[in-house]
Amino acid sequence: MASRRPAAPRHPAAFRRPAADRAEIRLPWWAVALPVVAFGALLIMIMSPGQAQAATADPALGQLIERALRLLSH
Image 1 (cartoon, one colour):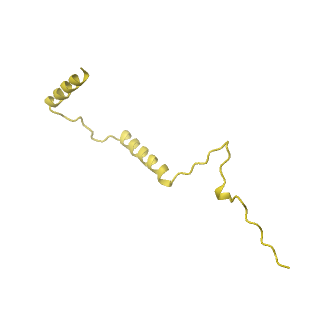
Image 2 (spheres, rainbow, N blue to C red):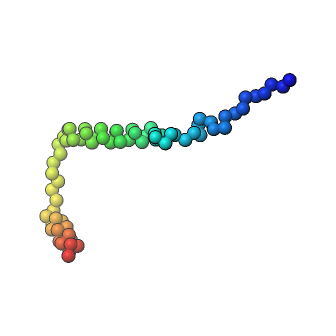
Image 3 (cartoon, helix red, strand yellow):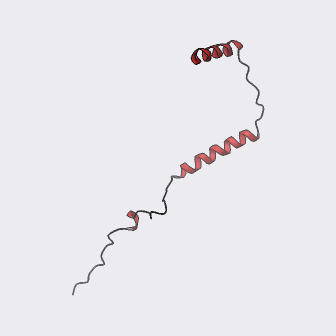
């Protein structure tokens, strides 16, 4: 008498859809790491601004931008 092999499951666990009441989200490692690194860098910059000084610009540049904005708003 020949032995029967067990039947393969019709729907393997890898292909099952998640239940309707829960969502399954898979993110790559860098999708979590990059925002954490960016937040940490911004937090460090806020906590220790160092020798930050106001930039000095030519007043003519400011006047040019102001006139351009006035022309665009009309």
